[in-house]
Length: 108
Image 1 (cartoon, one colour):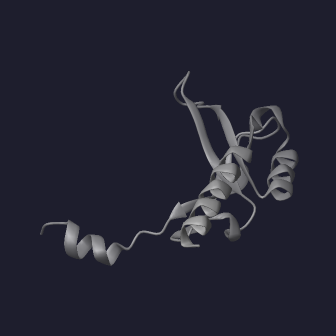
Image 2 (cartoon, rainbow, N blue to C red; image 1 turned 30 degrees about the horizontal axis):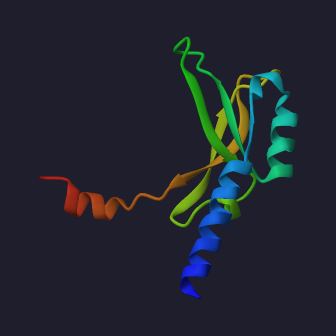
């Protein structure tokens, strides 16, 4: 039974990862970018860097904390859109435990 549950959850996770939509926010208004994320819950936004020509940038942007994995928090980010250079959106970032890093990973 555990094997069946594990297989089912892995299949579901793989299907969810494949189902995420990808968009170029520079071809959409900021309102449309935000509305698309709100409707779909999570999307991948891909666009060209304005500081480094030819460098593609992308990330997974989310509507709420529920779309983040365990150990991640929703943080504000900004992407370019057709009508603004800084469209506010959210993405998931790993929580860093500074105490652990200071105590065990850094040498004094």
